[in-house]
Each structure stands twice: as structure tokens, then as C-alpha cells.
Image (cartoon, rainbow, N blue to C red):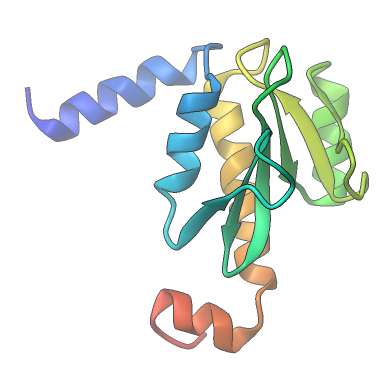
Length: 139
């Protein structure tokens, strides 16, 4: 089996999975371009940044495991209506951030979309020069 087929089979399996854990969340975030990880709020909260701006935070000591993700305000409300595991962002601007429970009722494919959306929002919100520096060209 080729690497591409293995990756494709894994993605198909994940589309219907409800098992994303903190390790998988962290790995997915860190595999996005130009992402850094830190603990500026203490050793119990992982913070993921692109261009020096946060796009995801994950609690290391909560059960169930939760993460905060930036979100378009209209989509944030829609996701909160759709999933009981999505709430207004804990300790964040509740209009622009959601807290999501990992591995409990939200399909992994949807969680991956939420992470991608958060990353993309933050990347697009960076100053043009910073964004160009990260992606290696101007827009």
C-alpha cells in the first residue's frame, strides 16, 4: 500500500471517528505551517500560535479534555447549536472563541475543520507583511 493510500484510508477512518484525544489535537496543530507551541499561561495550558497570535489553546488537566478555538461569530453560534460539546470560549472573548470537548460527540472530521478554520482566521488576520513573511510571498 502506498503512503498516499495509507493517508487517505486514515482520513476516511477519522471522518467517522469520535476519538480525537489531546495528543492527536496537538500533533495536528503542530503540523500546520509556521505553528509554535508554548505555555504562557502556565504548564497546564498548551497554546498554539501562528505568526505570534493564538489560534488554539488546550487544557492539560481537564476531564473531559477541552480546547479553545477561534471562530467566526456566526459559525460559532451555529456550532454551539449543533453540538452540546461546543460552548462559548472559556476565559476568552465568547463572540470569537469556542471551547470544544475532544473525543466526545464531535466527529474528528468536524474537529479538524474547526482547527483549520481557527488557524485560517488568525493567519488572515495577521498584518500583510507578517503574512507574506510566513508564506513567502505577498498577497
